[in-house]
Amino acid sequence: MAAGKIHSMESMGLVDGPGIRTVIFLQGCSLRCRFCHNPDTWDFDGGETIEPQELVQKIARFRPYFKDNGGVTFSGGEPLMQPEFLSETLRLCKKEGIHTCIDTAGCGTGNYDEILKYTDLVLLDIKQVEEEAYRHMTGRSMDHFNQFLQALKDHGTPIWIRQVVIPGMTDSRDYMEQLKRYVDNIPNVEKVELLPYHLLGANKYEVMGIPYPLCGVPAMDKDETANLQKEFFGGYDHV
Image 1 (cartoon, rainbow, N blue to C red):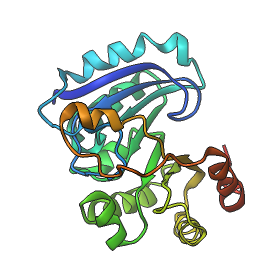
Image 2 (image 1 turned 180 degrees about the horizontal axis):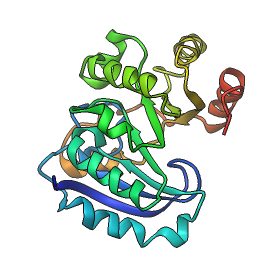
Image 3 (image 1 turned 120 degrees about the horizontal axis):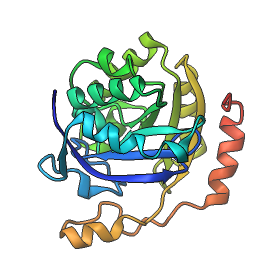
Image 4 (image 1 turned 135 degrees about the vertical axis):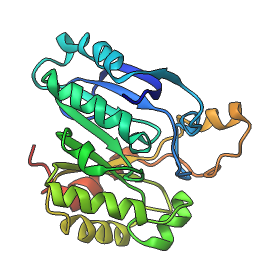
């Protein structure tokens, strides 16, 4: 049984899937997204070491909160970077009758089939939809993302798409049209969520002594984001 590294745990997540969620933030990520607000999760050597069984026991304690319409969401960092730990933890959660969700950028390693076998929902974070722009945004190629997306299609796993809307980068009507065409070609999408870029994680960079990539970029207007949501993705809400 593979032990894993977790960064932190949130007991009352309200925006991480359906219902009230217990959110587990796993340690480690290979992407360096320009808008990342959790740089403290990048380091694979950080965090708390824990066994799957012990973690599931902790999750099960919150069952009175999430009841029948909530569950557990594995976030990060990038949860797919710890595939053996994730798949075993998911398996044990399903054994306990707990609804499982992964919040992921689709950039991981290992056997996606074993992970998706025990996954009820995937929150799929879209960084960019073209290779060059994706590399500029994340510092990596789209290869791993494309492999995971194909696995999602093969399994028919329900997907909620998430796109951070950043002024001057992903907020144009041209990009929204491009994103909609991209999403329309993914068969199992139930919902699309446009998330306004915010500055809440910027102070972490200062504390960690690393430059903030989007210094000077303002927070995205929430009303404008809501208007884009309604215009381009109003039809994606089958939940």
